[in-house]
Amino acid sequence: MAENTSGRGQRELKVKVKTARGRKLSSTRWLERQLNDPYVHRARADGYRGRAAYKLIELDDRFRFLRPGVRVVDLGCAPGGWLQVAVARVNADGAKAGKPVGRVLGVDLQEVAALAGAEAHVLDFMADGADDAVRDWLNGRADVVLSDMAAASSGHRNTDHLRIVALCEAAADFAFDVLEEGGTFVAKVLQGGAEATLQARLKKAFDRVINVKPPASRSDSAEKYVVATGFRGRADTAD
Ligand SMILES: C[S@@+](CC[C@H](N)C(=O)[O-])C[C@H]1O[C@@H](n2cnc3c(N)ncnc32)[C@H](O)[C@@H]1O
Image 1 (cartoon, rainbow, N blue to C red):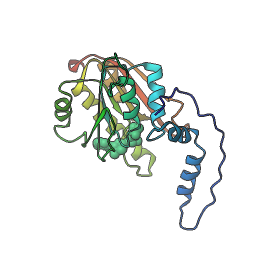
Image 2 (cartoon, helix red, strand yellow):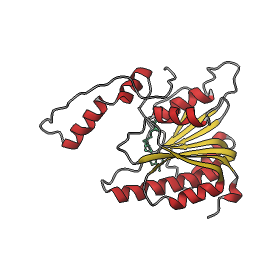
Image 3 (spheres, rainbow, N blue to C red):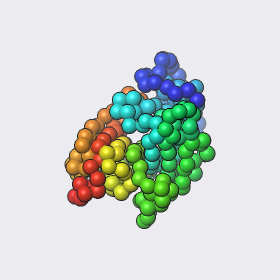
Image 4 (cartoon, rainbow, N blue to C red):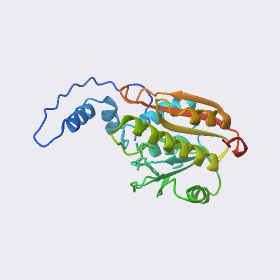
């Protein structure tokens, strides 16, 4: 698999998909978008499990939180694009001889196909004791907690927004429980009004909190990513 640098894909494709009997208009639109998305083509060519891999590549190219030797927890890791990027960058597979070897541990509600250098567990991260389980598996704390989680779409914009903010709040609580002091938390959120409490909590718990939309994030989607660095420790996480 080629480690890729950031930037938009090169190909300008314009594939029109005809509506077919039995296919919904929304499915036709999805198919058309996939066929015309340069990141989808790049992911296939580079051997990534999904175009989402480029979002993490772009975030890490900018903020440099994935260094050899770092311990990473990826919440909602299926199908494993972020795991692939994290394994290569923290040297969890030992491919960079002479560099420190990191750890990459992912959890998801779904099974993830095996990936050298990563360990993936089927786990609802919101279940009781999930943070203890992850600390046990890691034999300690993590340096980076990632969350690219999305709640199943209800089709209702406000409901979806509230759901993803709730997921992100829970992911932040999880990060407070498993992060090492000085650690980094990266999470997908949706642009909109309901996230002010989350941002305030993160600002209290971390030295620096930045909201970004990486180029690989589709411009027509409301998603953005929060990158919080310099975790101050559990004492600063109370509401
Ligand atoms: C957009 S996908 C992640 C894609 C991943 N970053 C990649 O590069 O392959 C979001 C994932 O979050 C998972 N998820 C949602 N809620 C979860 C929960 N409570 N616990 C664990 N995983 C969850 C879903 O099962 C889904 O696989």
